[in-house]
Image 1: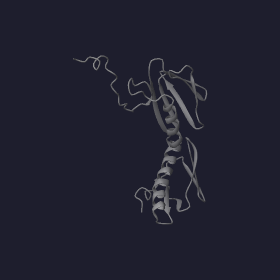
Image 2: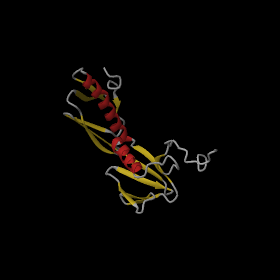
Image 3: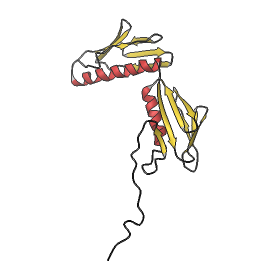
Image 4: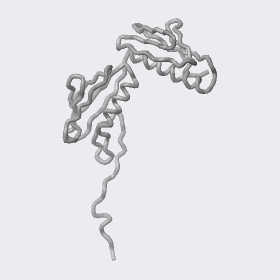
Length: 185
């Protein structure tokens, strides 16, 4: 049996779980999310814990067992505590502003970039260069952060662009003028 799949998921206080057939609905203080479970798996609530089991023992069922358990654990954590991603904008003149449900970004293009936030994601801008994204859905949060980063990926020469706060950018050395131009006869 899967080591991850057989671990029970503790359900914190204030979180309600409803299992209806293959659909698992989880509701908590930070929101409401649902997940559709594959047919080879079973989900049940026992003693305040969510337990994922499987009906078959073939390779794909074992893989889905651990995956589904991880996804359900992320949903439980998301609706109870939430998730957070921080992005940093580096570059002279690069900045961000929050305008309603969208971010307006100045990223060195000839026009400001307007980035609409998806439903369920909240943003906060600090000092015009630090963007904090929060949400209950871990997958949607990661996808939103990746889309924001792709608007101006960090430059390997100067380091300018949108990056995650803890991200390390491998810097390249630029051209050295005059070193290769001098030749002896």
